[in-house]
Image (cartoon, rainbow, N blue to C red; front, side, top):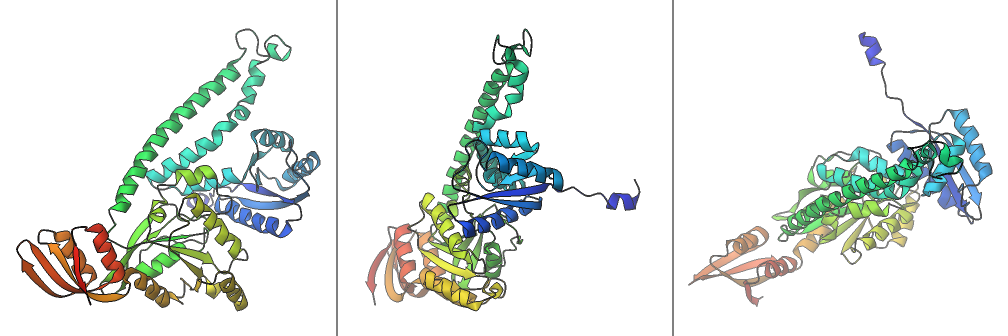
Length: 441
């Protein structure tokens, strides 16, 4: 093959039609949700060639958007030479089958699209296992719809006219294949759950081993700028892209706060509206950093029109993870990209504790560092701490996090006069129960 021909080779992107439904006059929410679906489709590698927004009082049980609209959709598929239809809601197996029968085109729903994106982004063994489990749990209820062609060939009807299609000796294999497939899926799901449970236990041990450090976790909507912020604060070199779910694997780096003070900063997977429940459950190990964090930094994209809705979506997932009671600091990121500065003031009114920052330009980051440092250290005071002389870890902790003024050795103990923050002192007593605070000036 000649060099110029080789350079012209390219992978053809799927041509997608997006379909959304507006119920009971929720026009603005439906349009905003379709924009997000467009970004998801683009992130999955598809080219969006058309968009449908159907207004309905109630959903159609058989065709979801109604038979007439599905026929119109089929015409659009032919007109635009589309090869995939993506619905902005979750469809039942029967609805998927009926729409595909009319449109003669592959049909997927929102959850399947998100799972596909996660599958393409998963890089580590842990992430691949988590995505595979979520995909299998999503696929399992849809197996009957996938095997209907074997039922037609086999003739599940026995002695009826339909049952005679396959002939003698072929009746029923379609139904048997479904059961075989289900057993295979169930066995694989059981095995994956065991492997992920071990990952969970290992991850918990890993996170708990950092109990002597102040742990901070970045959380937020996907593409809110968490990875860019982590790079700005720690020089972590985390990959950043302007697309949804660019980060799936948690990364932890040391965050220097000035002087000897530091925290461990973790970047986590982003959230999204209507994140599939199976995905949240499967990625619990990845989100373990947030579950056990001392502080959550909730990053909100202040330039997004639906910034407040995104904030509440993340808060909902945190409730599901039982993280709602964690100490949280809200960061209004991307203020450099906000076209109307008044919108930042509106957000600050809606989220009074929000700190405006820009991870890209560095605006507001010094104040962020000071706020976190105040939490890490607490109010400083002078104390005398008595330790066992063989407790090297406790002594190293004090020397690392406090200013040592004097130390006196007495038999098998040592007394240290230190200037230490109240928060650090609390961590010392929690992690080293044998330490004694003799006096506080």
